[in-house]
Image (spheres, rainbow, N blue to C red):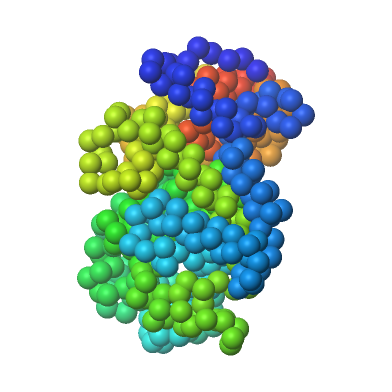
Length: 442
């Protein structure tokens, strides 16, 4: 595996080294094998402190809530602290706006069923062609059952993977009850202009639902600025463990009735949480926020112009994500420039990249890249990258609707996060160029 000299040095070089030390498997796997891990979109590298916090909460604070013991009180405290940490991460107005769940998919199904109770038969739901099916299938289920009339899919521009806002606006009408969009496409890396989407939805009084699973590791989120009604994300895509969270407007969480067992509280957020809450999930995500706060302190001065309206922990968290977003633009530019320079781009075995390709517009995407090599099975390509170059990518459909638009069943995806480096991007590009040469000659 060839490593090239970093193009991202200076004051951030030592910081990147410190960041990578926070992720025990950043450079090598558990066997000690050195590799480039570029499949964070399916489950990111895990923070050491998040795993430690989870283990401690699991072992030391195991009783259920409501008991008289010290241990039970610690469970309750751990859950509350976790809600507060996410409140600050999203700049939500209250920790009681934060709901935990098994997965983003389960939370979105729970939400769709709850909202269906107040939808008229002629209602429609608008989502997009580049959304994850976790944010499409729950609404399609309502259509199949005859609860709503139609699910409409807004187009994106095939050439650059950017959402077509004009098409979205055309689909939204007086019967639209929900506009459900991905904050970032998990296949294309395209960023959705959420504030503009919310403005379109608000004109007809539709709920705004954001699938932020592929957004939270990359972009600072302020739910009050976005003006969304609900937002869902997964902890295991944000350096933590399996499990997910949903933000909801407090008034809506109280007003809407989800499916629940009868003895459960009738008040949010507990009434939305099926079964016993998992204190280890809350402990782990709190540790993630502690890490991001640490990073925020390191970079606060560099991004001070973007966080002036925040204070305390919200300020540090916004500082961290603002720095991450800026650094990841460097990763995206490196990847885009490198892919375009691979020999054989126009040959039979050229690389076909889906979505935005213009490196000068890297601010419109996150470092997530789905591609195919013409004439090569995607799984064969992913296997070659791993076996020959120790580069971890995945060949899949990613549960994304986007690939259907491109009329391809599978693609290879390289998804980076801020603990990845320019050297690793260079190693990937070297491996991809070698693969193009190999399959051209075979």
